[in-house]
Each structure stands twice: as structure tokens, then as C-alpha cells.
Image (cartoon, rainbow, N blue to C red; front, side, top):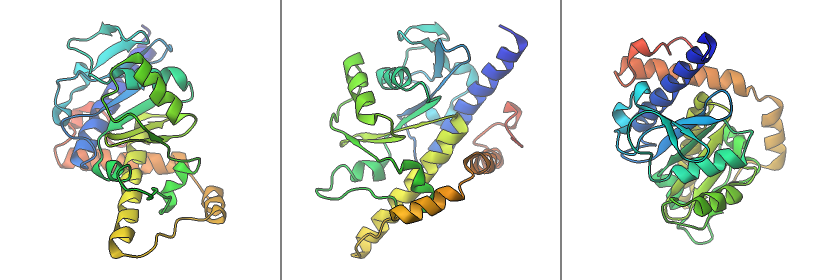
Length: 247
């Protein structure tokens, strides 16, 4: 590997480990769920082992896995739902990073008859194309299950999983973290409206156009990634020697 590839590889490892720890701190990940991201070269991706604690994940513990599902670097077994990440990454060349989690609010919106999760807050414009629900509530362990989930996701950026959880996809690990935070915020906003007894009033098509007109996604991702990493360092969630502060 070139020195550049080494540097990128190490940065991606640090990003996956940091994002995982931060998502635990934010209540989005817990004892289960995982983040994956592609490595340069297009032949492998990073993902954690099935048994390592998400709250204490370290960069060097991440596995390098190829698109046949074989571990080519690292020690430990892949997570049970490797097929979810594998098949989504294979089906979506535009996607760099995948999150699977069991966000309680996301699950709730798969269990309410006649209730759809709408776009309530401005940052939910990310899911303007739609938020489909995958009908299989079981663990996505088999290749055919992963392929079916990838088909349900289609070209969208978020997928609810019936009675199970959530899958998000993004262009980078920092973008994935930011999207996860905003997905939870949007779901919480709608739940608050429902709990108040009021009728939800989602963003209109015209409002979404207006939001998109002024959207600065790259700037926003950098701003929030910096905020959450520095907060994580201050709260001793993310070690300061991972070289992520000030990014």
C-alpha cells in the first residue's frame, strides 16, 4: 500500500470507530448495530466484529472484508447481519457508508397501522425521495435476505425495517453520523405531534424546494462532525489521539 492509502485507511478506521462510539452516546446504537464503510480500491470495506462492544470500539479492531464476505484482515468474526451491509454496498455504488441500528423511534413507525413517518424538520429533506419499509422483521443473515433489503431500499437513503430497525446510507462516515442524528430528530418531532393529539403537518413540496435551494450539505456535515467529535473527546467517548479533532 502507498503511504497515501495507509493514511486514508487509518482515517476511515478512526471515523468508523468514533462514529460508532458517538452513536452509542446519542442512544442510536447500543449493544447491537454497526457502521461499515468502503476502503479505497473498491474491493473491500471496514466493519466491526460481532462481539466487540460498540461503546469501546477501537480502530485497530475493525475487520477488512471483501465483497464475497471473507475477512481479509483482522481478528474476530463478522457481525451476524454482514449480508445487510454487503448487499447494500454491492447494489449501491453511490454509497460509501452504511448504518444498521435498532432505533426505537424508527421501529415504532413500522408498528402503527395507518401512520407514516413524514418529513417534519428541515434536515429531513435528505429523505425527500421516500422512506420505504422492508417487510422482513428477522435478522438479515443470508445473502438473499440482504439482496431483498437492498431492493427495498432502492435509490433511497433510508429504510425502515418492520419491527426491527433502520438502515441508513450516505456518502461518508461523517455524513452517516449526521444523517442518523437528524433521522432521530425528525422521528421524535413527529412522535411529539402525534402524542399531543394534533394532526401532523409535514413539509410541503414547495417547502422542500425552498430548503434544497439553500442546502449546504458538505458544510453542514463538516460542522456537525466537528461538534460531535469534539464533544466526544471532552466527554471521553472518543480518545483525543485518534487525530479527528478540528476536522
